[in-house]
Structures are given as structure tokens and as C-alpha cells.
Amino acid sequence: MIPCIDNYKDLSLGKYEDIIKANSIESDIDRQVAVLSILTGLSERELLNLPIAEYSQLAAKTDYLQTPVTKTGRIASKYHAGKFTLIPTGDLRKITTAQYIDFQTLAPEGDAKLVEILSCFLVPEGMKYNDGYDVVEVQNAIREDLSVQDALNLSAFFLNKYAALIRATRRSLERTIKRETNPKRRKRMSALLRKDGDG
Image (cartoon, rainbow, N blue to C red; front, side, top):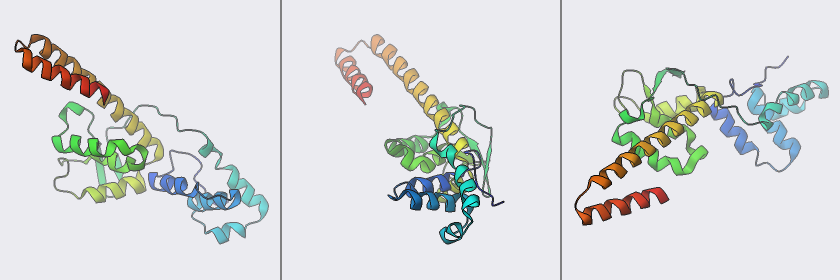
């Protein structure tokens, strides 16, 4: 039997990105063959030369791609990707300014930059963010070795933590505004808070 990736836990983020690109193919059969090629490692020609029964069995294994990934919200304490052991920055209060700026720059692009966003929060063991290692190498390792399931769990975890941090910062700023005695400074701070709430 030809091996075929048949679940999100075994599907790498890189292959998932390739599948998303393949989904733009207009012809249903060409799209299906392209996706099966990604999942099996066989060439499109090899797939088209399979007996129809065998091809149909492989095609049935792709059904999971029609359902969204179930995010558990649970993350591991470390992830192995390529030569790296990556540690998630679980406490977002400890992120560096560089991590925050890089995340803020990438966040508006969402899933299109998921690998890059994850590389903001997955740091090689024993290192500090973007210090002593090549971020592009980490991104390539994430793309090739991190599963879609793990990537989306991490993404959901970081976004929830980030939202909680924003809420806590906002509450702290509201308390500071209430204590501010200078009316001009209080007005400026209130304006910033409203602007931040709109963003």
C-alpha cells in the first residue's frame, strides 16, 4: 500500500501550504492529483498510472482536508524541528521588544505568514530571540517539521495569550488615567486608549 498522509498531526506546515496553493487549480481532477502528489510523494504521472481502485483508496484518505483542524489549545513544552529544539514563549509578559515588533508586523497577514509568526514565539533552547541563530533556518525547520495540528494549537495559544496581555495592559492604563491629575496628560492618554481600542 502506498503511504499517504491522512491526518493533520502528520501533515507538515510546508506541505499544507503547498496544498493551499494546489487548491487554486481549476480542474477538480488536476487539483486532486496535485494534492495526492503532495501527500504521497509520488509524481503526478505515477499517480495517473495507478490502477483506479488503488487511486480511489488514496483519494479517500484526503477527506480530512475538508474539515477544519480541531484546535486543542494545549501546547508542548518543547518542539523538535530540524536540528532545533524550540521552546514556546509561554509567558508573553517576558517577550522582548524585538519579538513584539516582529509579531506586530506579521500579524495582519495572518495564516499567510503563520510560519514567520510562529518563529517569533518559538526560540531555540538555551537562546534568546534572534540571537545566536538564523531565524530563517528556524522558519524553514518549522515549515518542514512542525505539524499543522501543532502549528494551529500554538497559534491559538499565542493569540489567546496576546489578547489577555492587551486586556491587562488596557486595564492598567485605565487605572493610570484615573489617577492622573494633569488634565492635558489625562486627555492625551484617554485619546491614545480610544485609538488603541479602535485598532
